[in-house]
Length: 416
Image (cartoon, rainbow, N blue to C red; front, side, top):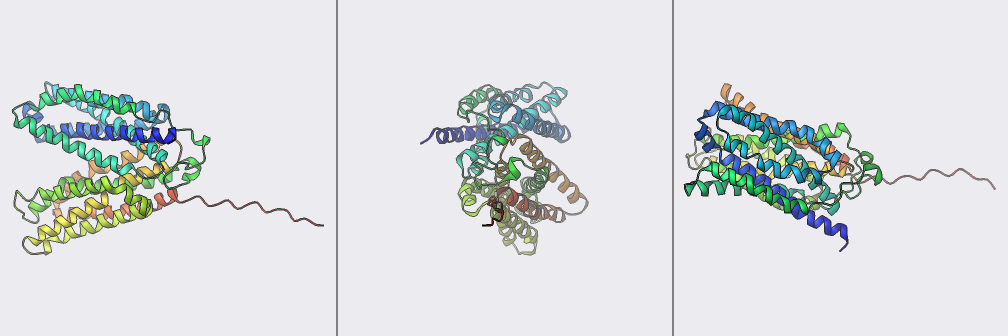
């Protein structure tokens, strides 16, 4: 086994560590929100403001992180961003009042955003070194880390330990866990675009426009990421509410709508790399948009069914939505890597597009549902799911299509 392949395999383990730990931190934060709300007596309005500030801080840092990654390499940024994103958990955990929490929430978001871009940029570089799809499983590992953080919080609270204590311990211990993962990352930054042939090492041999990702393609990829994340956010925040308010499911059964979606998405992400390797990125994202769209159609049509069948119908729809959306981000990020060259700025832009969709989607749906009905609101993510294929396919095709062989220059005619 040559050294480059050994480095790639070692780095793959390190990237898995980053995704699991990042998901774990987010799981701890999300699961600890009720305790934070009780401790500072925030209420829904102020808690919503805190969440908005965390998201806003993350979005701002995502837009800036690309330049930092391109300047210093994703490896170097991961070394600092990972541990820092865990340390800043101390801020919300120890905040003595709401005004202090407001400022610390922004800092927490900034740390999360930089880590998100850096670890995803490195995952793209590791996939290029591998020469085959491996990104999807990283995102599945992130979901498992989030589930572990939420589960640990439940165990700790059941044992009578305050969530604040858990966040403090995590903020001190998790940064140390990032260090062995960081030591496994690729030892050298990616070579400059001009130093290699365009698309060299890309899983599907994309040309990437001569080693540079044109910003028109970035916009298309960003639009696909926005559409996919908006559809995902709608499922996360409104699947259970749809089951309860529209389908009149039992209160204990309504949350299963989200559970079905989450399990389907996580499973396909963990198993999705061989699928993409066999089908290719273009067909994968086309099927992703198709499955997600059909899933939403089933959800929208569920009220037409009778009795408990309508709930099962909706669950089937949410499962298909999860199956489809699971591969959107891995395909888009891999397409960025297929362009060759430094990926930081392009990846941070695409990530910011997607994150914006994740933030805006649930809020827009809530506004539409309040003024009309939730069934009408869910038409929006259905259309966005279709937009995943409409915008993603041409961009992914342009980046992953094999380069056309060059036609030799005609030789001048000779005379005897």
